[in-house]
Image 1 (cartoon, one colour):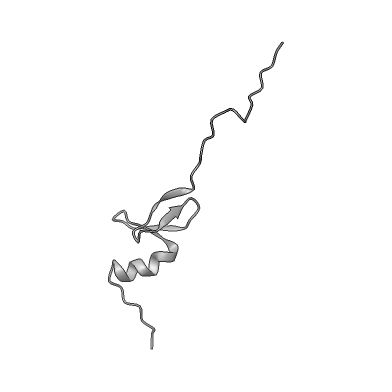
Image 2 (tube, one colour; image 1 turned 60 degrees about the horizontal axis):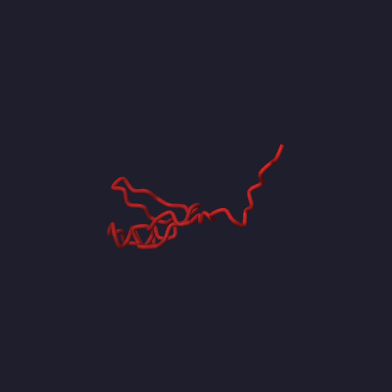
Length: 65
């Protein structure tokens, strides 16, 4: 009985990307990133949420006094 062993040096290499998409602010989303999805379908990275709220939704950042 002969057993065939696949040589990993000759099999095609499958590149796997960590790219998931682009958020509403134009930044790349990678698998594992924390994102927010809005009802209208917009996706925003967690680190861009303040920027999105002020620039896209018109929120004004204030300090309670």
